[in-house]
Length: 457
Ligand code: SF4
Ligand code: SF4
Image (tube, rainbow, N blue to C red; front, side, top):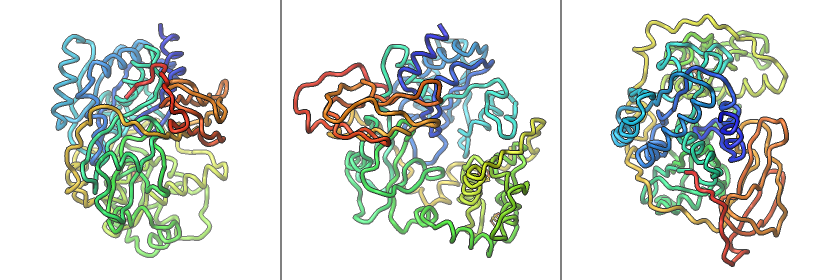
């Protein structure tokens, strides 16, 4: 059964829907004694996972049961925030018939959904430096991923997902959108932007990024889109250039340590002290074997240090992310591999309530319901990126001009690689093919086409 489940997940192209995009069949093929469903959805303003749990709790439970069976776990836990009452009631109801799965209510803090924190809360185990939850016998899957796993074993590939549209739009909501739908079209679905000049954050306000060009498509890992005024402080922070970010850090950091005191990974015992990294970058040529430079490998880029902790607008997260990329480019391995970690005694008292964070981000006025819209969006064109997952990009398997049905494979992972298949999310005609993307259009088809059972949310 477990091999069948792994194959079905691989064939369906399921990847981590919570943002990471890691191919799910790899996790399902592992051995673990605990499986965790991550329904924390801790990024402010996002609602897609909560809406999904309220709508389809039985599918979340089914997906988790399949993963539990596949990895041979004794214990299964669904973690979600207590404040999401509708989702909590729905999941509790679905679990009434399944006494073997625990419900773990979470406080409304950020970043409750960080995998390492979730593993610690559920098991008391600390994921080692440079490690993954599997190193301590735990497999974590996002709840949207689990619904896609349940669909996969019934032969339905990943073609859709729920995406929340929030911010300066006429009618915030959560939409079932075919993968590859243009983000501009999603915003139109939410009644359009209220400001002629606006910026778009792709993903959540803490870990997302600014949309650079119009027409960017949704991916399997994208849960939210936020429209903000161009002069919003979050937009200014995200659009700051690398040189400017470095210059400000070098000139202004007062070594107050607030960034380190609130860093969730440091509080778990990892050797990460962003204030010391800010000191280590004082020189133009950074020493690549310096402990507080290589500690960039331990940063999960949660953004707590720069968007909440720092009183001076310094951006340790940006600097650590850039350092990490540079270390990888230079081929410097991660030397931080300690396993004997003890969380800080004060960890519990340094957790930040999400409402306070939302206020600090200047987003309270946008923190409104984003109810699920009935039906599915029907874009006339989708752009299916070949690298919308972690690992190797998929290779296109179709040609321009070819007719295609929703659910057909359009991109295949290379044999033996860590990667994922990509499926057509609408029926139509292949408009163009490149190494980066396959574009499908219905406008060119104009004739009745069926589908092959796509439809995961
Ligand atoms: S982004 Fe900042 S707070 Fe978050 S893990 Fe990295 S250093 Fe710590
Ligand atoms: S919080 Fe800001 S000023 Fe304080 S040590 Fe960290 S980066 Fe420097």
